Image: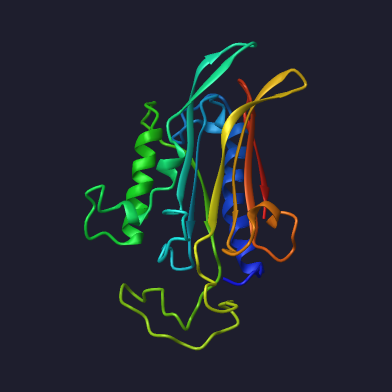
Length: 247
């Protein structure tokens, strides 16, 4: 993929994440006298459950990014010990699990499965690892969605009414700078850990990456020509979570 940012990609990412932020805000500001159908309203549990997923314009994966596995990852942990002098987190999902991809399917006994089916399987698997038994029912995690607005009309990737589509000429409403405009992003993860800010203990973690597969993610955040994104969460013990987005 060429190192080029498209406004369409950034818009989709921001719009989908914004929905989650609005939902969190409305729950925090609401009345306490209710039973929420959403797990952990306001994200007030210290044992956070956070996940991320990526889709293309067809609501599919189509092809995994190199060495990234299926574009589904989770950060789920329990606070095993909590005191002012010592805090221990036990993570339920490790990086090997987060890197699972279609190449692992056969060894896992998942035969005749394509990348889209594997992504659905992986999401359920991560959900099982993260699941919290709660009332009125169990729940798994709060999930962020990354969705590219690019569509390669010449590649004919998106099905039409459940059937394979035919290539058609590019249109202005379907931006695409060339081959690779619909690839999955690279997703990296800073696992949640305990940080100390002004004598206060804070939980902090993030997902970040880029759609530009040849970009150096270590410098992509400071460059204007890379499709860099990041989601960072920061939470004080016993308080609601703060979410910070960079697109």
